Length: 430
Ligand code: MG
Image (cartoon, rainbow, N blue to C red; front, side, top):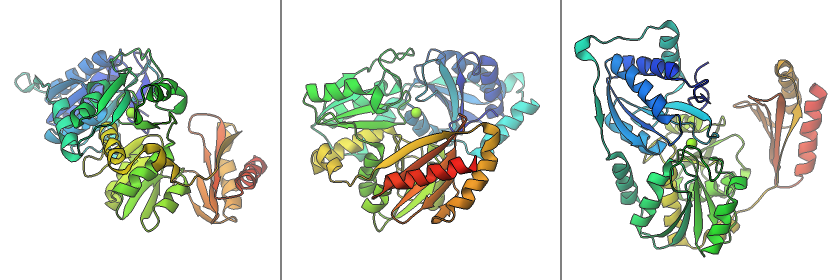
């Protein structure tokens, strides 16, 4: 299978080769008349971009290049074309490469569209244009400015001191600029794009953000902002140098964005449900694409993942880490310190663990586990099996990549017992 849950991704020049990229370009170009293409700063970016462009042109599709940009910038630019193509491996380590395809409304290609592309590649049934209808290439340098203008037009002005850690990724081209234009005093960290990602791993998880935590305190800043490699994700550090958990950030945005409804993945804390009482909380499979699809289907007000993907449907269906950063600054500017906003939210203990299980035994085990879990409460099988016990929940999910069954439990009280019960059920089923 070519497409995973986040587009096409793999080791650069081993799995993600120019040959593969050429075929993707041919297939996409067979179905679209125009495409806009961008890339993150990875070392493989230009190689893959050129191969895709060749394929698009050969199929008769016209191409506009926007250069090195953040994924949300590319997805926003796609509104003026038939589709968007982003060369990125998001938060993966530097040796990875990838390709993600976008619709005009900022929604990533869905499963059906991905299957069509895959089928054309498999059959080699792409279009080959006649000599006089081969596509042409345009270049524009306006994409970043247009995206920035849109964001600045939506948020108020700011005056906070903010440390921005772009992780040497694509955010370097836009986030510090947007926040400065808002009026903030911006101190940049790792904001020179570099495909070797020398400063830190591109994933914005706490263990990769020690420098940001220290810098936020040392400079006396009100908050710190961190992005992944292509800036569709954003995470934050408060003025005390504390990493803000994704569930807390989700509640902070949800409280202000979701008038009636919100979409979150199945493993989101029930703190979010408690805080957003009165609003409908829809749960989906883990993955920002699933959150975006459900958001569109339900016409919900906001969608987010604790991993740092925030979707504001009034802007785009693509998670936008830059807009999220600007919006967070606006919230802190108007409502007070980020640490206070975080501390106002309740915290429930959550335990994440796993039990080893070989891949061939997973299916059978999950069937037995399902029978037992159904005895404990209301069950949902959107992604693995999740039981709502009234006071908490337990999620049992086979790992997609490792020989493990993962167990997550959260409860307002008694989480240890709940987790132990889940672990017992899983072990009994093996
Ligand atoms: Mg990303």
